[in-house]
Structures are given as structure tokens and as C-alpha cells.
Amino acid sequence: MSGTLRELSPAKRDGTRRWLLRVYVGRDPDKTIRDAAGRVVKQGPPVHASQVFRGGERAAVKALDKLVGKVGDDRTIGTAATVGKLLDEWMTDLERLGKAQSTLETYKIHVNKHIRPGLGSIRLDKLTVTDVSHYLTSLDKVTGLAPRTIRLNHSILSAALTFGVDTDWLKANPAKRAKRSGQRANTQAMLTTDQLGTLYRAVLADDPDLAVLIALAAITGCRRGELVGFRWEDLDTSACTLKVCRQWVPGSGGQHKVDMTKTGRDRTVYIGVDGVKLLERYRATKREQIGRDPEGWLLSYDGGTTELRAKSVTEYVSMMAKRAKVPAHLHTLRHWKATELNRQNVDLSTAAAQMGHTIAVMSSTYLHTSDDRGAAAGELIAATVVGALGESQND
Image 1 (cartoon, rainbow, N blue to C red):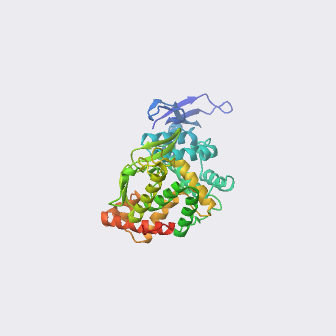
Image 2 (spheres, helix red, strand yellow):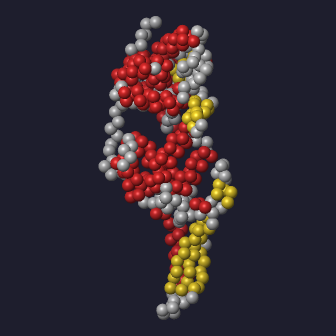
């Protein structure tokens, strides 16, 4: 980091010598232009920290050295950059790194609907813990967002600011110490097995196709895009499994098919004998409706030609859960399965493999899974779900 010293005209009042001290900070990212791939097309102008010093030349040199050290300790590249500009750079970087489209869409919603209007105009060098705390409080008291949504919003903001720290846009992340006033503990009720049955029966009376989706969501623990991405050829009735190898991802202009899971790895989910029976009954129902065996997309109103829409399914389940007075949304069923696997003493490694999660290296090392354990886990969950749904197990 370099500094320059330039003598100015003496003070008019007393003739004291004056010096302009300048220290180069970096390029202003607020005026840096990047292409779609995140590459710099045009650098922003240089940014300097400056100070006018009164006194002799020797003292001015010492003052310059002190300013260089201070700027080095507190340096923020491009002090004029705003939170909004940082959010743009962060989102561009996530796209460059290949972040899942569904995740990007969620981030964009929170950034554009809440974070940018609330904090976007604040300069990064002026952003404080108090600013972030007041913003989070406003989400609770003014907009009335659910605690879970506020926590996600806080996490997204914190991730963006951490990116800013890592890339020298700011010194520290104020979101890490921020809290909203009157912050409540997470009191969201866990979905019980009885409530799962209540939700299923409510959906069955309204839309039998989506009732099957409810059952599969609980049995497999799959994400919404994976659920609507199942095809009939993914079902292995002899092994009692479903192959998870694609997903439908909501985005601008409609949903898009991605031939991989969110983690980038295919997996096999065991659904048990009861899970297979449930799908065979569904197959028979569709056969009766369309006059032929269904093929193509497993969950479909027209026998496999047209897939269900992931976003619409999510909205429908939330609506039906509210109508049935059940504390749930579609992703709650994934959490229910993870909790149920743990309750039924399925080992962590097997549970993680079935859910498509990653686990800590130590857990992976000391807990070993097998197809037999996976099959047993599938039997346990399928039997529990089918029992809760009130489905006959004696076909």
C-alpha cells in the first residue's frame, strides 16, 4: 500500500505549512463492470484515503506513515460501494460457481423483496450491527414474516456479507452479531405422524394424484423437484426402490428439467413393500382412467405425458395444510422423515444416504451403511406412512 505527500499553500490565517496526504486503497467495485461470467470488463476508478496535515515536513512524513497503517488495518476496497452492489457481485459469483438454480431463485426472492429495499442503499463502510438488527426487527414487526423466513433472510444476508469480507469489501460481518429485538425462540411445531395422516386424507378427498405425492414425500424424504421428477422407469418393484436422478427446478419462464439432483449425485431410495403397493394401486387407478399403463412421469394427471409443476405443488400443499389445520408445508415432510429415521434408530450414515444429505467426515468414517440397512429403513418408513394414511396393507 502506497502513500503520497504534496505540499499545499500555507494557511492564510497563520502561515502554517499544509500537506495533502493520500493513500491508495484500491479500485471502486461500485463502478467496476463485469460480464455475465463475472469477469472484469472495466475496472472502477482508483479510491484514495486523504487527509490534510498542518506542520513541518518531517512531521507530515510521520503522519503519512500513520495514515498508511490505519488504512491498512481498516481498509475497505471501494468505500463508496453499497450493500446493493455487494449483493449483485455475490449473486454473480454464486452463478459462476454453479449454485443450484432452485437455491439461486430463493436467494433472489429474498434479496429483491426484502434485503435490497431494506439495506441496499447503505454504504458498506457505514453498515453497522445496529443497522442489521433494526432491519431484522422490521421484518418481524412491520412485514410480519414468519420466524423461519426471517432466519433464512438473515442467513442469506450474512452469507453475502461474508463474501464481502473474503473479498476485502468490508472488514467484518455485522450480520453475525445482529439480533432482532424481542427475538423469539423457534416454537414451530413438529409434524406428528397423526397430523401426516390428517393432511394426506384431506388431500386425498381433494386431489388423489397429489395425495400420492404427499405419501411419496414422506416415504422418500425427497425434495419437491425430485418428487415431480420421478418417472415410472425409476421404480424397481423387486428391490422396492426409486432412483433419484433428476429434478424440476422453478425459474423465470417456467420450470426447467435438470438431469441431476441438488447434490449432483444420483441415489437410490428404499420405499419398502408398502411403498410399492401404494404405487401399484396408483398405477392401476391411472390405467383405469386412461385405458393403458401409465408411462413417463410418475406423478401426472394425464398418465405420464405432463409433469407436475414443483412451485404449484408447494403452494397447494401449504394451502391444504392450512385448511386441515396441520402445521406443515411440503418440505416439512422431508424433515418428518429425517426425524422418524432417527426415532426408529436408523444409523446416521444410512439415514444421510437415504435423504441425500452429507454428514461430517468422522460420522462417515465410523458409521457404515449397507443396502440391507437401507432396505430396512425403507420398510420402516413406508409401513409408518401407510399406517398413518389409513391405506390397506393386505392387498
